[in-house]
Length: 164
Image (cartoon, rainbow, N blue to C red; front, side, top):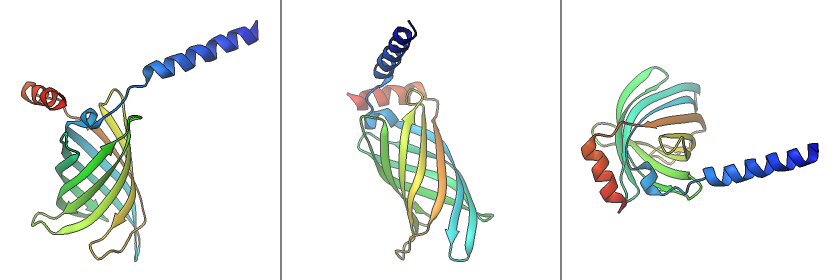
């Protein structure tokens, strides 16, 4: 009897998991998102805390653009972020982002691995690479969490039109 119950339970769990999986596409992240980043950047002089808060907008062509306020070891800056992204059917994806100062000078290029969850209303990411304009790679331990911003009716309709 216990074996039958275990088999039934495992069948239900496997079936529920298959039903819960939804294919993701670039359209899964269309629109505006708010995010926070936090972690440590390993500089030649030692470890330094890093944090950022920002807003980024994704389009249907795989592009992203936004702004952020960031702090590295207590030094705060206003940055512009521009990049490209791709989303796999399993809701995992990658992103490459250029971070620029307000005058347009490249500060760093960041690689991210992310996953979309909570019915495409949240993403979680980890920085996989951080490269300075001179080509120097810096080790880091930085994670990012993002939530979809509430859509206005106009933006919602525009996003629907872009998906078609």
